Image (tube, rainbow, N blue to C red; front, top):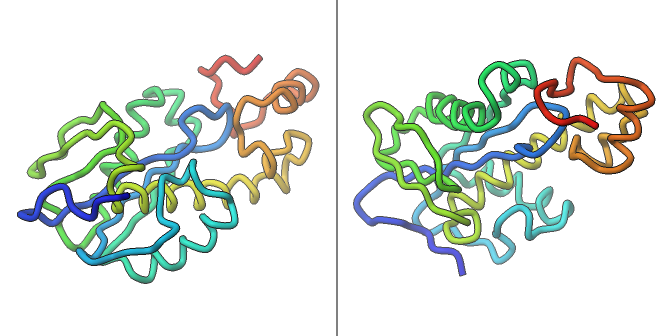
Length: 191
């Protein structure tokens, strides 16, 4: 059962990312501030949900959240500063976009760089423990999947509408046959 709050004393924002392990496409970060009483029976870590469940939850989260933001960090930037830094920068950029200033950042995982003026708490498997992080994981994942569908129309041979840029056998075979695109992360082991 997900918890709504880490602490009763702060305005909390949950942060997560999607696409860290991909060979192509941006990493997407999400940040969500939910009302204290937010509840939906399906809400969970995005990886535990079907695509259909995530698509159902996305408009509910976007409508009912106090605030939310989603940011993409490009493959080019990932190649320049690495995937961990890109994920953290993406989360920072999400917090930058929020009009309501959070007082506590809840981060899925065990690594984060301090955001000036706001305390943070890293929570391993936080997307399966706290509603705001689960919501952020769903927004990051659905926005990223939508983006990968879009660029798949330009590069259908990589099957990004199916593999979403992850290192599947088909994706690696397409790289071997067709080479790379501007969307590929050149610092990743592509083959």
